[in-house]
Length: 196
Image 1: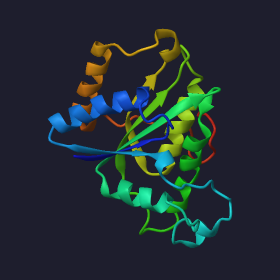
Image 2: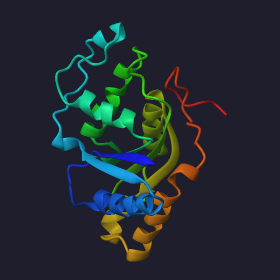
Image 3: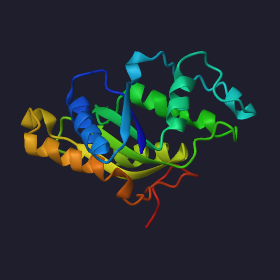
């Protein structure tokens, strides 16, 4: 398996990177690879709502977004990470997700169905479940099939990740492809919560 990880946290040596390093060990133990990218190493602008992508050809902004998307298209598995600030994913994480729609208007640019791990990190004991569900929905609209969600919280209270916790992430990396796809709880057409 050829995995690609996009870390949208600006902290290159933070908790997210420590966890991804362990997930990578698991992937490599299962004869796979994992290329790790940091979003802030790239020049990525925000969606300007120009709607030029609706004519095909992808996003017309002259930045590194399409370079990242080309790397994702070449991968067998995608790992998306985002920190939670003030009860929602950070702005630069959302900026990347906002641009996913630009690939949906051109069959040559559409992302093939790709399994995906979604990891959210935060300092609180719990977060609003809508944040998890909406991030899942954004990835689903980009044709990603989320099969593992990691809600890594309580980091400020605990202050560190114990070795036994980090070892668990190696197991997750080894088993990534085996997890079942998780149905999203949001209606993709209306972007509202399904009524059950």
